Image: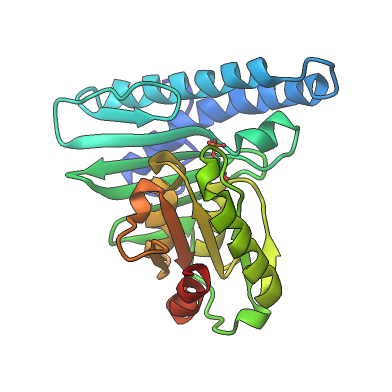
Length: 266
Ligand code: LIP
C-alpha cells in the first residue's frame, strides 16, 4: 500500500479499509473533475463513469486482498470471487453512480465485511465531503471519531425521510411512487440518490428514516450495520423481506418504525 491511513481509530480492520479508501477515492475525485467537463458534451460521460467505477473497485480489491488474501469478495462491478474461508467483503465502489455521472457531488464508497454470513464491519465514505462513517458490530457507529446516534424524534410531521426511485427493476416503481406520495403528505421528504449515504445519514440523525425498494446487497450492507450500531431500526417493508438482500429496506429509529412500515405496506 502506498498511502498512510488517516488514523482515527485503533481498529486494525478499519485502518486497512481507510487506507484502501484513501487510494480509491483519490481516483474517484480526479475522475469526478473530468465528468464535470464531459457532462456538457454531446456524448455524455457514460463510458467514462463505468471505467471510473471499475477502477475504484480494482483499487479496493487489490488493497484489501493484499492484506486479506483468503477472503471472498462480492462487488458490484465483477463476478463474485469466492474465498478460502468464511469471510466475504461486500463492496460498492461507487454508490450514487447517477449523481456522479451528472456532476452532482453526492456519492460514496461502501465496504462491508461479512463473517459467517453476518456483517461485522461497515464503512461508508463520501469523498467529496470527506465524511467517513463506520461501525463495528458491538462497538458502536462513528463519523470518524464522533459517536453516532439515530434521531430520537417520534412525530412524522417534524421528521425528514429519504426515498429513491428504483434504479434497476421497474417492477418496484409503482410501490416506490406510492411511498413517495405518502411521505410527501406526512413528513419532510428528500431524494438524494445514494442508498449508502441515506443509511449513513439515518445513523447520524440527519434523517429520521429512509425507505427503498429494489436495491442490491452492496448498496446496503455497510449502511445497515452503521444504522444498527447507532441504535436504529432496520427491516424490510414486508415481514419476509430481508433488508440485507436490498429487496426492500426501512431504516429509522425505534419510535417511528411501526408508523413508517404501516405507511409503506398496502
Ligand atoms: C444506486 C443507489 C440509489 C438507488 C439505485 C442504485 P449505484 O446504487 O444508491 O440510491 O436508488 O437503485 O442502487 O448503482 O449508484 O451503486
